[in-house]
Amino acid sequence: RIAQEDAATIGGGGGGHDGGAYRWRQRPTRKRPLGDDDGGDDDDAAKQAFEEDNPDNRSLFLHGLHRDPGRTLTTDVLMDAFRPFGCVAVRFPKPRTNPMGHLPPPPSFAFLDFTSHEEASRCLADLKGEAVVRNIMLTLKWSSSPNGAKRSHNHHAYTHPPPFLAGGGAIPPPPPPPPKRRNRITEAEAADSTTLFLRLPPSLDSSSYPKELETMRILAQSTMEDELNTGMPTDSDERITAEDEPALRVTVRQPNEEMNYGFLTFASHAAALTTLVALTGQEDGGAVSEEKLVAGVRLESSTGDEKASAVRTNVSHLNGVTLYWAKGAQPKSSSENEKNYGLSFHKRHFPPDSRTDCWFCLASPTCEKHLIIAVYEECYITMPKGAVNEHHSLIVPVEHGGDGALVNKKIAPEIESVKSKLRIHARTVLQKDLFVFERCIETKGGYHTHVQCIPVDADSGPAIQSKMLEMSTRAGFQLKEITSDLGLNALEDDWSSGYFYAEIPLPGGGNDFRRFIYRAGDGGANGGGGGSGGRGRGHVPLQFGREVLAEVMGKPDIAQWKACVVSQEKEEEMTVEFRKSLENITC
Image 1 (cartoon, one colour):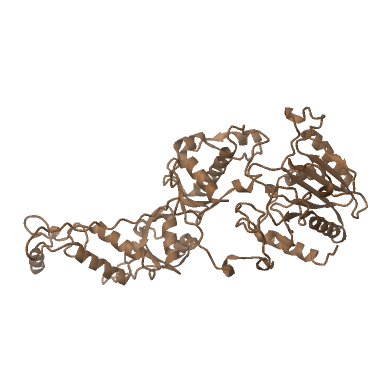
Image 2 (tube, helix red, strand yellow):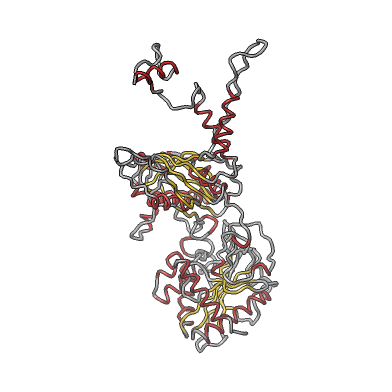
């Protein structure tokens, strides 16, 4: 022991004026390489900068496991937490042997392995170097590779010049330390991203994470609605909402229910940017304004009370929540990125379209191809989200445009042919009639025209007609019957302001039906004076056709598509069955 103390004294292992003669001074107050008298943080930053550029490094260093005395953060728990970010394996350090036979202490760190350097980098950027798993704060950084350690050691050797220079002269100052790694990305760097990273305040209990993430989703979505409807009352029928316009919708994703963060996905980069600036005041993101949290959010009432749903709920308990950009999706090869469910989209060339947030544009990332039944030259058949029944379909023009599908001289002939096919299918396969309608009225968020085709019980046409005329009168617009045999595209009229069109099946089946039309901008049901609610012209509700069926069938839920949404697995099953039953139908 005396020999060890003497050796430590000579080597300068202790501190103080007596050279470390006492054992409690022999241990340095901070671990660092021999001869490192400064620059510990700078050296670590240099290592991280090197590893970030090292394409061979596919592992991250996870620290903070010592905060888990109960050892609940097992391999399975950590894999569940980091698998959504591309993690393929969790490695713990080899336990240190203990000659006394005591149980070794729990490890304070582990390694997360990924399939590529890019996957690891994306995980580190998305999590901003931190993660909360089971209420335990963990930190992430690049693991050290052998080459990285050598490179870092060489950098350290040349960073500190010798105290004396040959030939005299002043000692030059050491080079500046490398810049520390910045985890957050800017709006310019996220130009292709439609996703925001959301972190909840650490003060919240983990059991409330899913609920509070949904609250932030509603806040983001209602913020976009408010920005679009500036100056318009919240109860106005003219107000554009996310229920009516897909471009305003926001979804939330939480990789693990025990983590205090998630991701908000928008229909477009512009929508995400609008929300980020409105909530944080910065294009690059930051803490959500306390003023926005105090103003509150309109949460849906569990009782269905519209007045209660219109009241804003103060969410200031979320003070400290932050929003930043997340990286955009990396481009994948066509074989990995396309899932066309048996449809040969690569064999057909569709006209390009600048809109990428429209559900019905085939080139749009929001187009749900698993719902598509058949594709033709000018249009295609698809099932809608929240279908009224298992054979509810839409006829959608391939080319995006606000002109009505039935008045467009280019595509109307093919749409008429497709309607006849669906009508024959309803009568021969389903023993039902077909109710057809089109609401072609431009909305503020844009509109891709489509024709709704819904099989209904045989001989229910008169009841649908009576209820439709009654409800249109209540809504303040008047439907007029078309007595001509000509199609809408052949009628000389101005349809630029929009219209609502319906085909009511006649009893007895067949291709016979009565046609009704309302041209937007015409006088109301009382001769142009009033309509309901004091409006000077009629207003066709966005879900008017479905609302008519809900009244006739006595099923209030089918009036709103959101009440009819099923799982994607069920949607795929319905689509495949519909496609098979339609294959052998010829006009």
